[in-house]
Amino acid sequence: MPLPAAPPDTAGVSPQNLLAAVSIIEEFGDFGLIWLDRELVVTKIYGRAAAFVALGRPLTDSVLAVYGLESEISGLENRSLPRLDLPAVATAALDGDASKRNFSFFWNSQTSAPMAFVYQTDAQSAMELELSKQIRARLMAEAETAARARDLARANSDLESFAAIVSHDLKAPLRHMRFTAETAMQNLEGDSASRVLDALTTIAAEARQMSRMLTDLFDYSSLGRKYEALEGVDTAKMIDALTQPWRDLGHTVEISGLWPTLTTLKAPLDLVLRNLLANAIQHNDRAMTRLKIDCREAGSQVKITIQDDGPGIDARHHETIFLPFRSLTAVVDGTSTGIGLAMVQKAVQAVGGSVSVSSDPAHGRGTCFTVIWPITMDSY
Image (cartoon, rainbow, N blue to C red; front, side, top):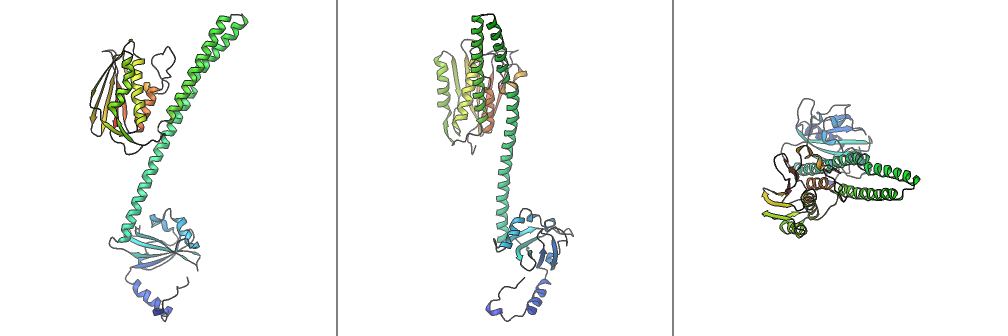
């Protein structure tokens, strides 16, 4: 490698004197040189500080920090960087020594390959502090990557669930429509106009139901991907507004507890409470429902309970009611698709909360849903 131009005060120093000085300094074992090929395999070393590497082996065997930096080191050939510094890097020596060394990589134009200048470090320096910052930044990036991986795993799980739904639940209205259409065709041959009209009415109702199912499925799949701004939500005002329409219809609503202002996403919380209220009233076997709604703070979260006086839910159905398109009772007007509780569970889990149900119809009427929701959300 050509020697750099010497400053004026050392211009008269011969190469032999420089080599002699380097040899004297090398005796202290404070520095070394490592020659590499383009694949970062060690081809030659000089100095005791470089004796930890093995000839003919990749540098990464002894310096794990080099992993992932191959392109940066190769870029030294094009002078994209004057050099690449790695301060206070732990090394794995052949004799078991695991001391730290500083590295400066540069390009050797004579060998058309990179070289590394190695020197010892015994105490934490400014370079080590900078390395610590870099490590923290990398750990933060890895944590973000892990979070994205969890989101991807959840999305894949949703896709598998959707595949099962499309292959089974959404086919039910289609099967019914096909059977009804075939019946109508047979009635046409017998010139039974009233039966044909009934069949066509059924087909239209099934088509509307399937349209609602597809719309609800889209809404369900969108939960967790709608990013909104966090805001202060007065839960007392929210629950009062949500229950007022039911009170106007004659249902009894008792609200108790302390309803704080949450720093949260308003739309998902509204969705959860609205669906639980509607579920309690729509599935009651009595004309008028009595609801008891309570809110209590529990550490960094709030515990909201919604209890009705309906027929109750058998324990064997406590998990399945949260699956999409699962309804334990048939709704006469066909407005329900059985996805409301699935949306509730997904919305609650997306903010780091939970929802559970307790009911024992064998010993008494009523069902109680419990929602755990964070008081303050940092992000979504």
